[in-house]
Picture (cartoon, rainbow, N blue to C red):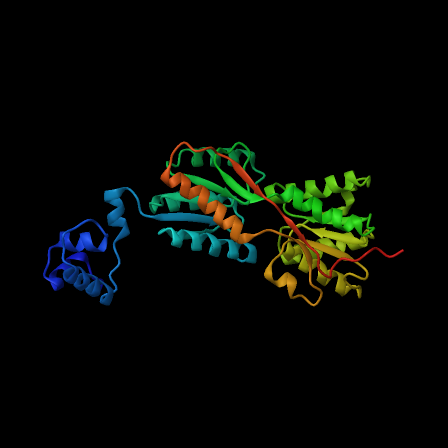
Length: 339
């Protein structure tokens, strides 16, 4: 049976008001003995306040929503845990919604969470090339009535604060590392077309080639979807085009590239150098540890929560987009080009 505040008051032989004052740490004149008795009863019966009822009075539920595109991806799973940790430490609860990279589910998830009475929202957008739908989504977000923060992604025309790694700088660092090892025919496995992160990492790849005086060859760009299988398929395309190195726009696709290389009786890095992006946990424990771009998940989660928390407490703050610095982690998957 779920205990109510009235049940506790009856058992403690005090008024409902007295119980409310004690459990909500409000100023009161209740003796410490009585207060201890009330807390003890509440603890023994696992009492939890009805946040929906509290929210009707205070207009706040101390609950935020987090929308992510792919919880099966270790990066987003770790990101969810990071945000949840900072929410909990600040006295908030978090409701997680996974959209499976479906832009239509972004819209339905926002509506669902707002109807659940969330105080604020953190959202990592699914990639969407449909401009009309993106415009409708921006209108929906602008009319929310609750503060929201963009995480790891962006929609052109949006007005809100946000945070991500500096994707283009990371892509440039990854490609420049391969160039420094003497590679010139460098393939790129990019993420989905229309994806904020993929487009910027690809831009970094192109910029690094340009700075080094290496002509950009569009035939050396293969499109993936940030999943393992697409990395494997894309790597086969690039290997058929005689690349000596591959920059994969995330670690999962880099793992797929490993398999493609090995299926051809080639070796990483002796025959093909590979660089990823994310620095997932598994990247350091592969038989050939992956050289990759590190983005700090705790820092992303902390900054996203800080931006939202500031707006939960204050109105009229700037809608600044923050880009955190990427770091190149050099391991064993890259090697100087032969010859």
